[in-house]
Image (cartoon, rainbow over all chains, first blue to last red; front, side, top):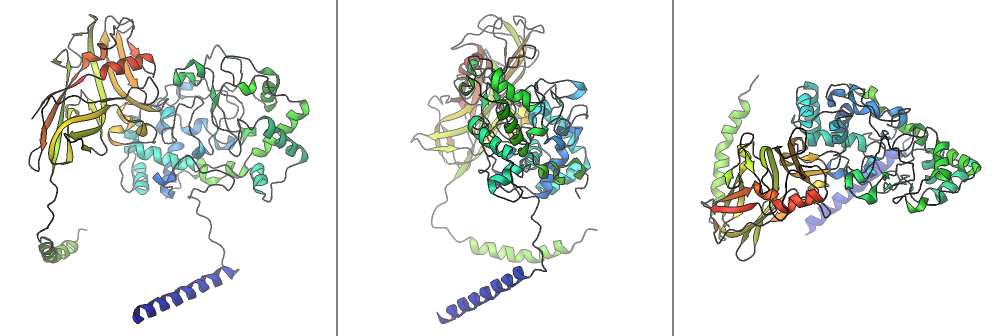
Length: 357
Length: 257
């Protein structure tokens, strides 16, 4: 008994002296705090828990870098011409600025606008028609789409297997050099899941941080936004990701039925997933078919352009009452949603590819 | 350079391992439960004849002549039941049956507790959970071509061929049955009868359940199909449901031995 107690005491004393040592260290101004590990997923303070469960696919430096290399590699397309980044460019928050439709191989043109990629870890579904239900399954859509990358998954795997650098990177990321679609998609989910945009002026404002000051006009715009737009573009992600018909006149040449194409349900005709408005200033043109090139046109649509129809979202049946001043204020606010630290984060950049080792 | 040193070290240690093992072989008072295995063997047939891909003409109940070029389907979530209702569920129970790959037509379920099994259930298709859980591998690898990439979900069963009755310009008949939720989904849970036969599993006996899968059932009951009007399906709609309702009764247990 006594002996055991003695051991306990000495352990306690050791622990106490160790903690005091640590305390002494942190007081010392000479020793800088360690840099936060850039390859760890961190939930921003003003965000909910992510939808994607990283516990099943823990982010590692090697996995992230493999995902990044795949994202920027045209090898994923049939003729090795088109990468994910062909239509998703960091300078425009991984959308395709000034391109109405996504461009595939052989200059084929799609009928939908390439959306930005950020905060994908919070998205319950992917694509404008919400047809893809998981971030790990998302890349298989554009890779196999005949008017996008037009490649088969077995061919992608064969091409990766024929590339020694990929075999080495898969081995680093997953412990051995087996290359299969699950590993490829998980690496890509690490890269895209890490694309968190949460440092706009709006975010800093919400978190009460320095740099979060809004001008009176922006502040008024935020109030207007919250009363007139935020029931669908819900904070803090600026979308509830629900597919809706937002009253756009149907372009009969494209005849894109939207969500109904997936569900085969007439009640889903012309419904498209509500997009996030983060980085909206950079992701023009707007709407699922890129028909509007300015935010003014977008707000004019909601104020006076809504077309009635059986599947129109009921919240829009009377349009949204907006004065010219309201529109200007809301647009001023929308521009506070730009996140320069995300747009310039080197670890998401194509220039970082090739420096994996 | 290869070094023999680790190998020598292992050799030197071997007697220790051996002696350890001796200590552990003391008689165990509780008898260990016995385990065996069950083999599943599937024969795809058309009107009772073995399915031959490509070259053989078949006739459906509507009188349409057709050929089959590709025939694949999933069976999953296999459970083996004893007469008392207790059951053994195969873990990771996903099998892609592919007529063009003979090796896929039979497989073994291991670690089955000994006993007399009198019935079984399984799914034609892949359960909803694996349709919403992201990237899968093995039998569920989307590279097997049994996965809708634009509308996430597994193709539960795929039948492709030709029929001169098809309005398709190349006479194609193409049936991709999918959908893991909703009224029109393609998953069916089935329980083909053992017909009083018993699959007796012991530590030394591994019975084989010979299943027959009658392809003509796809076009037979309850929904009579003619290729003149129904020749193509690639989405989860009423046709999808009709065909799934039809293939739900295509399995029978031929015999068990």
